[in-house]
View (cartoon, rainbow, N blue to C red):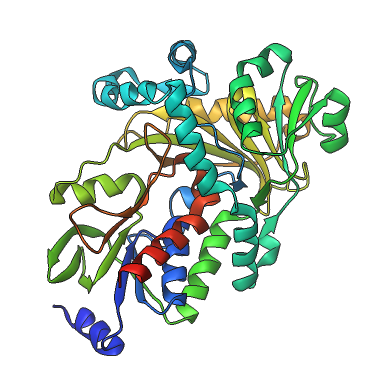
Length: 410
C-alpha cells in the first residue's frame, strides 16, 4: 500500500471506507451522501469536479422525462434523421460497424411493452428530482443555483407535435403536469421566441440548474467540509485484494466499497473484471452566447430539433444534438454551427453575440436505463453510470440508492 493509502487508513481507523471514481454530478452527489452518512469517502477524478458533461449539459431537471429515447417507430425516425447531415442525430459512417450492436439493442428497446416497463422505472427514478435538488442546494448553501420556472417544449406546427404524441401520452399517464399553449401562450411565457414556433407544451413543475459546473464544485466543497477527500488521479485499474484497490496514474487507493461513476469510461474500467457494459457515447455539443442570461426565464426545448436552451449565469446556452462517433474523433464543427444557427433563428436577439463552444460524451444505455447498484458477484463494487441525458435530474436519487444499499449491506 502507498504512503498516502496507509495514511488514509490510519486516519479513518476502523471506519468503513468508500471510493467514488468520477467527480461529475453523479459521483459528486454520491460521495457527498456517503460522507454525510458516516462512511469515510474519497472522491477521485483525473481532471477535477465537473470536467465533462457535468460542465457542458443544459442544466435541465426533468422529472417528466419518462419516455425512453427508443420509442415505437424509432427505426423509421432514425433512418430519416441519419439522411439529414444537419439533423439532431448524426452517425459517422466509419463508426457504424462498431456502433451496430448498440443500435440494434436500442431499436429492440422500442417494443411497446418494454417501453412501458422502462418508463415506469424512469418515473420512479425521476419523480422527486426537483425537491431533492432544492434540498441539496440548501444544504450546500447555494439555493440560488436551482430555479423552478418550468420547461417549455416548442413545435413549429401541429404535424410536428403529432410526431411526439406517444411521448406526451406516456408522460401524462405517469401524472406529469402538462399544459398545451398556442402562439399567444408561447409569447406570454417567452416573448423572445421567433415566429417559427406556433405550439408548445409547458411543464410548470420542472426546474433548472443555472450553473452546472458551479453546482458540482459547491457539492464537492461541502463534501470536503464534512471530511471527505478529493484526489486528482486517473484510475486505470480496479482490483480486488481483500479490500478493493483502485490503481491510479500516481497512486493507489483502497476501500471496502468502490462506486464507479465514470460515465463512458466506466466500460473500460470494468472490462478487466469480466463486466461488459453496453454504454455508448452520444456526443453532445453546446454553444453559450455570452451576455444573454436574461433572454429567457426557463428551459425552452426546441423539440423538433432535440435541442435545449437555458438561461445560465454565464450566458444563454443551447445544448443538444446526438452524434455517434466514438470517443477518439475531435469535435465536429458542423454540429456546433447547426446549434448556433438554430439558436439565432429561434431567438433573433442572439445575432452577433460572442460565443463559447463545447463537446462532451453522454454515457447512454440502449434502453435509456442507467446502471445503479451492486455489481453481481463483486461484493462492494457499485454501478452509478449510464444516465445519458438525465444525469443532473437523477443525481440525488442515484446517490440515495447507492447510500442506502451500502448502509443496508454493512
